[in-house]
Image (cartoon, rainbow, N blue to C red; front, side, top):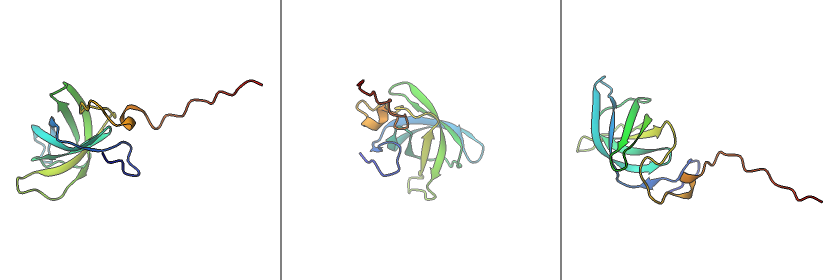
Amino acid sequence: MQQAEGRRSTRLSISIPVVISGVDIDGNDFSEGVRTQIVNKHGGKLATTRRLKMGAEVLIENPANGRSANSKVVWLDGNQSLEGLRSVALQLMEAQNIWGISFPPDDWTSDLREDPPPVQRAKP
């Protein structure tokens, strides 16, 4: 587990099979089975054979739990691996555990942006 300063939720290095679909940089519709590299409550990093552009909308589907979520491309690795893969980071439009992590880190189950409950003062 990795909770870096400034991160909204703990990142987990884990390979989860998912299907991504959308429109690539050439305007072609695609659907591709890929594996995650890193995930958190707000998105993840994965490798794809498709060339995507910043801000492109991508649907992520997790066949293991039947969940899907809309996301957008927020980071692109300019390098391509020998296997023809490019790493991309996707931000979920709505923070959630689409990944099916059974025992997620504590910061995945609480909204850290919520205001704390009001303090109850004892009556004199």
